[in-house]
Image 1 (spheres, rainbow, N blue to C red):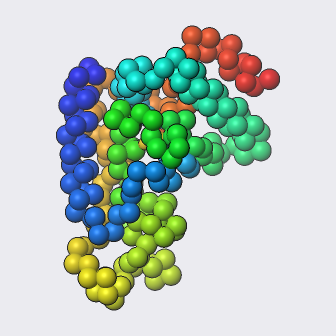
Image 2 (tube, rainbow, N blue to C red):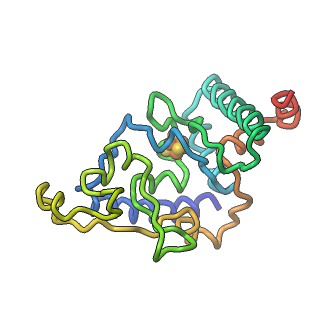
Length: 213
Ligand code: SF4
């Protein structure tokens, strides 16, 4: 199953890379940025986690795996405390436990959703009327040279001044769309990345009881 997943993942990554290539006039992603990995939910299916695990079991030392588990436990505890004052679980975001020095420590085995960070995504439910910009557009990065939030449009004048001839594009890269080609595999449940790491610990139940104390 992992092998089939890996093949589909390669196909998807090629497709996404072609989108990034097409939009390169607007994209400022570079190693050492880490903004997309510092404030999110990072949902993944169980099969994705198995692939991620293959990566860190191959490449991480025991100490590094322990440090990863410690980070996941801290996020669990932070979320537990957060939910005491806010019952909307979607209001809780966190730094991905794989982020180290603003780089992904498991890059080659990163989840599906991470591979589309930086593009403009059409909303899964309202693809014709709603889009999601990468968070960094507000930080002077992707698309920020040409997008105006006040006017809610791309500035043709700015595009001309910058000599950009590429059309800015919106892509169907919501998680729901990205996962579609994988639906014929046994994907399992979906959970946040830190939850999978904790649930994989041998003393999972005792750990979570302790974290809630
Ligand atoms: S798995 Fe890697 S690419 Fe994905 S959010 Fe975490 S650090 Fe970023």
